[in-house]
Length: 132
Image (cartoon, rainbow, N blue to C red):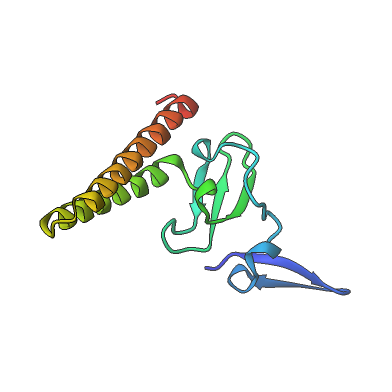
């Protein structure tokens, strides 16, 4: 069953499926939640494919529908992306080395290390916020 929303257009109010409402017109839409996203529950939204994420605060029950952009994603998801980028750059460095491009390989290795450091920093920040 699809979620229904009450929408008022002029003097007429109708109940329509949330599937047909642009995200920015939803009643609980915000650019970002007022609370750190690592403290919220994800209610709906595919973090890899959806254009929006729906969060719920377990303490208050308040919900937010936010754009699916990096600053609205949990830190662990962003850290996983950094891990993936690090692996891609390491593979690129090996490819450059095999083809004799040592300076390009060095740059790719440096990028891979920066991504690993960013992932570690995100995980550390999450531990501070969540306490786990």
